[in-house]
Length: 281
Image 1 (cartoon, rainbow, N blue to C red):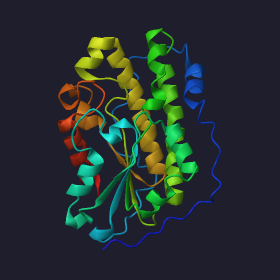
Image 2: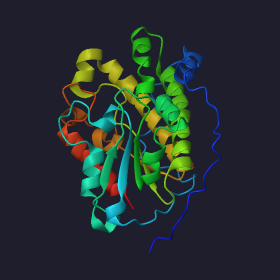
Image 3: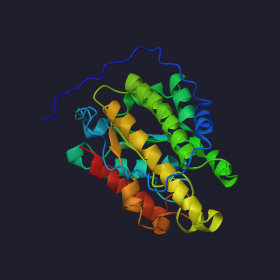
Image 4: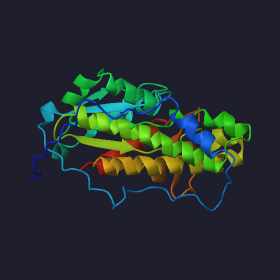
């Protein structure tokens, strides 16, 4: 029997963050730093043990369970033409875990962590959060999109990308703060990482070359590390998507991606669903 745990509501006035300039400021401050090809962090597979363990989850009758999806086009299932992982997760949640549940996918194509934080601050998702028993968050990749043109111009090496990813992590932390403030007491928050924040597989190699693949992998690992840290600090559950798609960096994810090389295909969506179910207490 899992004890009922109530979240402590934070004061309505939250920390003000200069989110709009967050990524580019970090990138500019790190530009020009040398790239160390041996410095890539290993893929994150769990939240750091230095942080508090994820909070216990209060069981909720299946008839009242709602799974809320927040995030970017990965959340919406863009370009797949299949069931997105938020909807599939809710439908496949077993009775032992309180399922099946109702899905409420509020993902927005192109959304950044800074934009999601602003939307949460404005209260536009307050009602959705209040009734959600599970929140799935996938956000942060679009904040880093401006780095691609900088890399192509030779103005953003590994240090630049890593610094920018760390800065985006602060925006993700702001999102998790807001979810903690407005979410239902005793609810569960699953925060995913990414297999790649840019194009990957055959498409990534054809459009940008092998050097881009190495750089984007390092940027992705840096973002995943900071997302995992934020999840742990908020006592939320980090869900590693890097390893299922990429292994230890030695797997080719092409077969799990759509024609754009950026979003999961049906096989990729199904894989994410299985990983989320496995991560659910």
